Image 1 (spheres, helix red, strand yellow):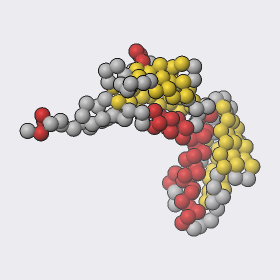
Image 2 (spheres, rainbow, N blue to C red):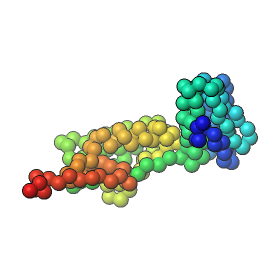
Image 3 (tube, one colour):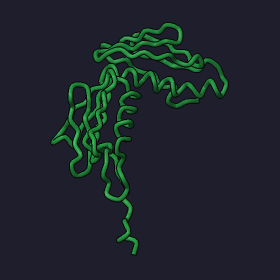
Image 4 (cartoon, helix red, strand yellow):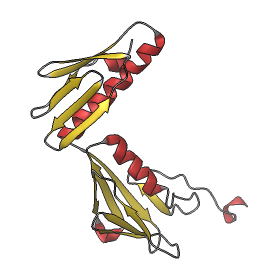
Length: 180
């Protein structure tokens, strides 16, 4: 039995759910999210909660139970509260600026990196351009955007320079001098 799948999803005030076959739409104060769910689960929508149950007893059918419930819960949280990831740049001269809907990075390369933000994603620049946060209602899109940004200059293991998540710990290696 799925421990996560058994839990009902409580709907906050202002959030409505529309179900048409396997397509589900969640509408809230921050926006609307749509998703096509697996036919291996059944979704029951009441006034105040959503319940997800497997469509049968097979192992493959039950595998989608907890996943579908987690995806629906993330949709409900996204349209009511939203998601936010904070990132920071570590390195001399590393900066980020926001120009319209484009993030412009100075990361020690011979050129600037311009990253247009996807639709539904916003960014805020923090102190002196070395800290920023990415906001959105779709948890998957926020995470993928941050992963793409991090790939421009991932943290290196010797000095820790690069783009990292704000709560990320980089285990540093000893250099050549530390080997003796």
